Image 1 (cartoon, one colour):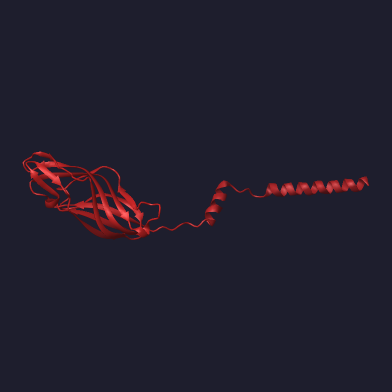
Image 2: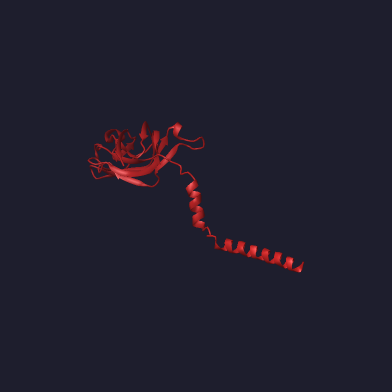
Length: 200
């Protein structure tokens, strides 16, 4: 009886040892491999992107030598079919102070900034002007009156996937900056939106 029990005990011990050795020899899975496995089974969402680039150009207004326009923000608005229920639809392209002289952008448009955005339809542009100042042809400094610091330009345009959408704000200098008195000006911008596309 004792011999039979001893034999069973030995067989059990050998079996346990073999199982432990098998487990010890099995290759360990690292955290990196676990992450790689998760990434392999997780589908990558596909989003169509394009670029919006804002430029500005302008013919010179009469009686003015320089006209420096300072903006703090430019935004574009997505069409309703591009926007989720919880989104406002407004996308910021420029969120910093930028100044351009209307006289320095006559021959070549100045690039104000650009941003990657979702491809699709857009409906309008919104700009925030904080100051318009410069010199008259008589070398007298001036600061123009800006009745509304928030300017809105409503014109639909499209951002194509894999393309750069170039939006050029073509100011009409003669109509945008009007002289209201001696060295006094009023800035009421008249802007034409020019749209061009460049494949990336």
